[in-house]
Each structure stands twice: as structure tokens, then as C-alpha cells.
Image (cartoon, rainbow, N blue to C red; front, side, top):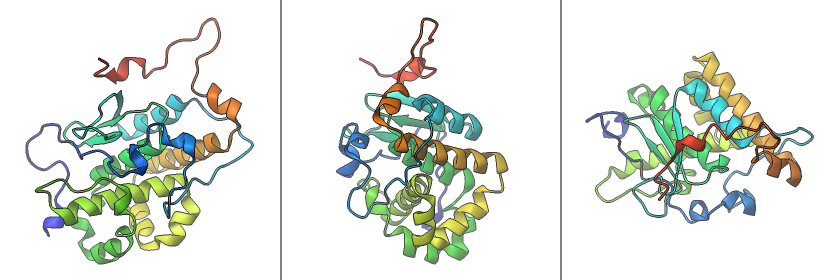
Length: 239
């Protein structure tokens, strides 16, 4: 199956996944406009909780998975990309520091790579996955010229499935049961990662369910002894 190639195959150099390029994801700070766009699965907010700091939500996940999250003015090779996963180095690049939605999508690529969700082991369930992921892949980036379109779309579909599950677990499981069962069966073999993903989901949905004042506070360092965000040194290509 040429649709089953691994992300990391070939030269050990950084290779951009192309970033996100659909109109929804090209909107700067698109979270401010709300999560609903067409049939894309929206966030299911959890109300009544005080949200974590944005960078704590992100760091708590990447500390467990071992990926490196960076902020960048130009995260990918495409000029309008707002997020990119680099399989060669395991880096996840996002343009907007508070963009939890894009963080979830790009971490979806990273998890697909890490757990071989579309690797050779998926051959027995590939047809079922394709039947469901075809309804999701248009929310990711479009295949670049010369790419294996089937493989590229499937990877975008899987990343978008993971984003949807993190944002709205119940609705995603209901609409895409085969993909969910395959995803859970693979990823839950690592209990630490599975718990970190569930915690990330709760943290993100609590952030969405918080009032505006708490959301703003989650982006700030306050007090006389406040230290910079742990991500301050992780901004690249600033100029």
C-alpha cells in the first residue's frame, strides 16, 4: 500500500506537512470568531472551571508526548499556513500562541506519526477509516503538487479527527466510531499519553467554557514576581 508510508521515511531532515491551508484555518486568531464553521465539529465547552494558562495546557501535553512546540511567524513553507508538523524533528510549529485549535490539529499529525495510525498495521481497517476520514480531510491542508493525494488526504483526515475528538469527544465518537476505536486501541497502549490527551481535552474545553475575563487572564503573567512564559524562548523567525 503506497498509502501506508510512514511520515518519517526517507532522509532524516525536517519535512513540512504543508501546514493548514483551508480558508477557516487561514483566519488569524480564528478562535476569537468561535469554533463553528460549516459541519466542522465544534468545541463542547465545560463551564464553571478556572482555565489553566494557555502555555500550561500546551506544555502539559507535549511534555508527555515528547514533541517540541514552537511559535513562528511563518510556521510552514506555505505563506498562509498557521501550523505545521515536521516529522524529521518532531517539531510542531504554530503561528498564534493562543491557538489551541491548530495545536490540536498539528498534534494530531504528530500522534499519527508516533503511533502509526495510518501505517502498515492499519491495512485491515483502512477501508473503514477511509469511509470516515473522507468527511474530515477537507478541513486540513490540500495536497501539494506531486504528492500522493490519497495518502496526504488520509493524514489530514486523521489529524482532523484527533482535533475533533480533543475538542468534542462525545460527538466525534458518535460520528466516527470506527476511527475512534482504532485510535483508542493504538494510543491507549501508552497510558501516560492517553491520560495526557484526555487532560488536554478537558483543559481546552474548560478554557472555552470560561468567561472572557478568565480567558484573557490565562494569556497573561501577573504579579511582581511573574516570570516570562516558558514559551518566550521558543519563538522563532521573529524578524
